[in-house]
Image (cartoon, rainbow, N blue to C red; front, side, top):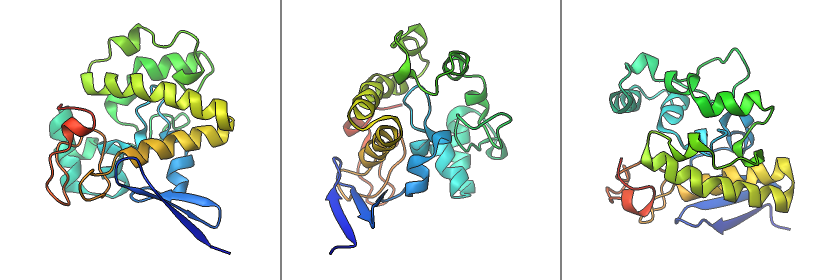
Length: 196
């Protein structure tokens, strides 16, 4: 009997099932199942550069992400936008997110549960790449939940998002919004979410 199974991911990454638990290179099964990382809008926090910089305690990456969003490195920290209140580390932008507030007010944990999706907040989201990702991932999340039930479907959705964020050239993990693979140098923006 095999103790593990390896499946090729959609973007060149791999998912590994070790004794019944799936893992994707760059993310642990615990992260994939962590509801704190399941951003209601569909921008899975586990693939966010701010989260990855926080998780890895990477000051250089925090500086890069802070420069992108206009924050100092010490302010550039987050452990997921759906942390229970009061959150341990919630990025400033996420703390003011109207989508997060709306979902919580409706008693949901995600827009995939809302009959009004896509609403004006999604359609008018400030970052075009984010809006593109949201419009693609919420239908995927709904499909996974319809097929596998809420808990397993949500984990399957998060796993699919993580699998997507791998370099099409070398297969190494990326973050959402990556412009170039740091492992092999390949330009990846147009193959993933477009230029920022």
